[in-house]
Length: 200
Image (cartoon, rainbow, N blue to C red; front, side, top):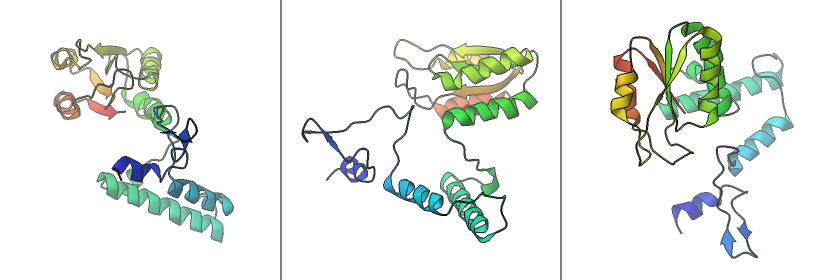
C-alpha cells in the first residue's frame, strides 16, 4: 500500500472510483476547493452539533468552543514553529488571508511611492489585492520575470529590490506553471533590503 493510498482513505471525496470502479479519483483543483479529511469533517460536525460563538459567550457551550478554538490555535502554532499561539490567525483560505494582509498590514504600512514586488507566476488571489492596494495608496507593483523553464529570475528580483520595497509576495509552488519558488533565496534577498515576504 502506497502513502497515497493510505492518505486517500482519510478523504471521503477521494476514497471513490470512476469509470465503474476502474480508476481512483485524482483531484487537482485544490486552489479552488481543498478536500477535507474525515477528522476535519467530524470535528466540524461536532462543533455544529453544539455550536456557540468563540470569545463571545460566557455560558458553558461558549466556553467549550473557545477552549477548543484556542487549543487548535496552540496546536497549529506548535506545528509551524510559531512562538505564540495568538499569532495564528484562522481564515477561510489563502485568498481571504492575502486580502486580510493587504487590507490591514498593507493599508497601515504601504504608502505613496512604495513598491510591492510579485511575479507573473501568481494566482489572481496573490495579484489583485496588491494591485488594488497600490492603486488606493499610490504605490507601485513590480513583477519579477521568469525564464523559459518557468523559474524566477533571481537577478531580476535583485535589480527590482530597493529601500522603497515594502513587500515581496510570491507563491511557493505556482499553480500556473508548477514552478517551485526558491523561497529561502527570495526571503533572504527581500529581508536584506528591509522588505517583508508573503508566501502564498
